[in-house]
Length: 168
Image (cartoon, rainbow, N blue to C red; front, side):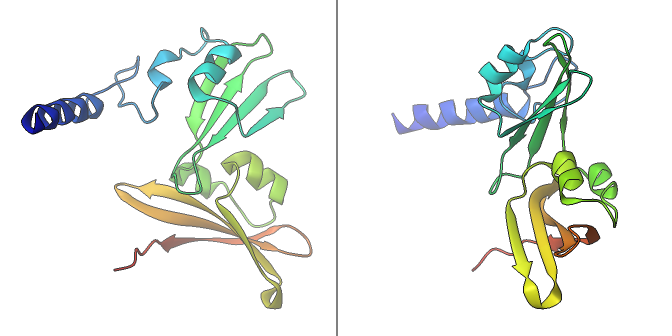
């Protein structure tokens, strides 16, 4: 029985390793391969992903559904639903390209909209600083992207990246 279970586990792991979406890209989140841009409805997205953490409403009728997988997870998914209720696009928000868009002077709301809900928020009152952080994947390493805000103005002052060190 033990050998059969082990073979089954190895087979399942191999299948996960080679699972691809409709475009032949490796699946980064379970269920994404069931969704098609321009085809799937908002209800389909919710069926696959569950209830969104936040729904952002835009003036043009589009909606963005936010799915943070933190604080322990290292991904935040943003699904754009067009004004007709169809999935327009989805993307991973916690990427180097998106982090590069976080510049001094942006507001908390602007950062929240771009990166999703942070894993933690810590205030350093003596420094008049509030730091939000998100876990993210840098290759195979998990790191923290930190956004530093001035407490008074609520504006970004800088960003930084921290290594995650596990005890041992």
